[in-house]
Length: 295
Image 1 (cartoon, rainbow, N blue to C red):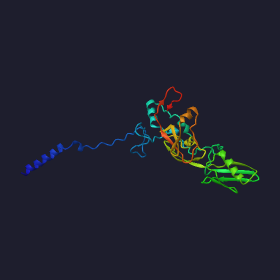
Image 2: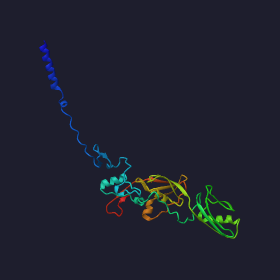
Image 3: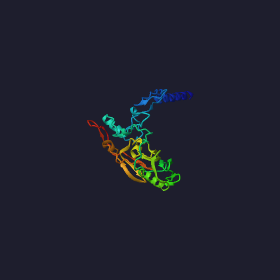
Image 4: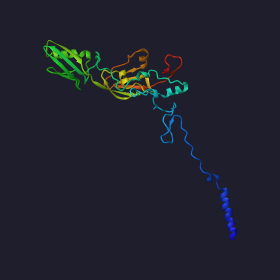
């Protein structure tokens, strides 16, 4: 009986060895080295490569597209490449620029109009403006006065004069009339010293949206330069200026670029809003044309 049991257990062990999976006795394959992807830079010390500059395909919602290396300069606004430009470059093999975008390529953050230019006749006096008042004859006056927040100046022996809201060509006559009520037989000259600063809000698709502090002589166009111009998806043809929630003008930069016209450029007031709208339909022109670009 014991001999039969020994034979039975030997047969069971042999069957288990016969039907066990073959691959359980084979060593697992050695790991293969990772194949670098296009544009990948291997990580330091080996390991999985790090993707640093994988091409971006159009139509995937990619908006943060890096600037071209040949355009990278620390002192100028970096010109971005939008998805339509990438699509055209892959389709035609040509890198076409956005027409007119190079107008703002050299515009830095410190762009500002010259402050020593003459004040125009229609300039409106406001709080913060410095007035230089000189008079000679029976009186001798040499004053530098700042228009206060109430829009007034205080002339000694004459009193408080409300000057805010007056135009530059009205200012001298108004002050001379008020002083003439106290003094006689004199001549007067009134000029501007340092002009006030104003805050303008740039919103929409601009390179640098936000609050901008600019000179009171600034216009829509000069402030657009200070903001770096439209972004890679901003419109060159629809730039609105809003005052008191009303659109007072809409500038088309193609008028300036093609015909040199800036009739829609307008002087800014404190609290104005510049709205850069998104670009509309785009078309690419290449080949034997004078200005191959994206319009």
